[in-house]
Image 1 (cartoon, rainbow, N blue to C red):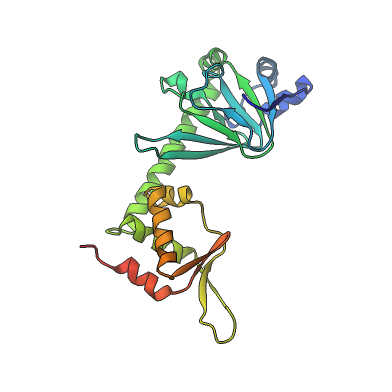
Image 2: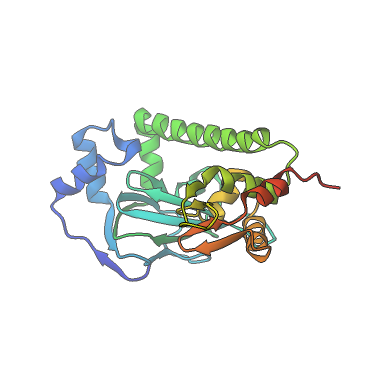
Length: 249
């Protein structure tokens, strides 16, 4: 770990903080106190590197986000694409190795000032074997995640059947945009006040970040849109709609 500060807190305060971890909510106070004593506690500032891909030493530990948030990054294939996940307070990461899934390529960075409680893998395995509530909560967590991803993928493909990745981006931008009065004598525009990150759009639309970036760049090149950070001004709505409806040869 890099740039960390060990956290000095009374044992009772640490046990109360662990109560906020979602999979620990049904544990008895005595068990939380024991777990809190066995965890190592650290504070990170924004952009601190918690884990770096290929780093040894802390692999096999389970990290609980007590406060703040953490951005997780994993490569998703040989083409160099990276999948990002934001883990907010109450969540955990690092436990996948328990199930035979290597986390050696995981990078974790603090998005805000963040407090982590870290537990050795062996202790977490023992906890899962003894506390049914934790095992059940973890299983339900994974089930909800799978259902959410399946629903998002189905929604993206069914709501815009037959469209290319770029056309799905254009349609989504039009759906996000709102009318904006640009003044007397100037045609009204559509405006996306806060353009989602490329990876967020890519996940939502079942495409890649490269397709999203290319589609937006093409709109700017054609003078159909203009970046106004952090938003996007759509200068020619009709032309964009024609791009959405164009049939591919």
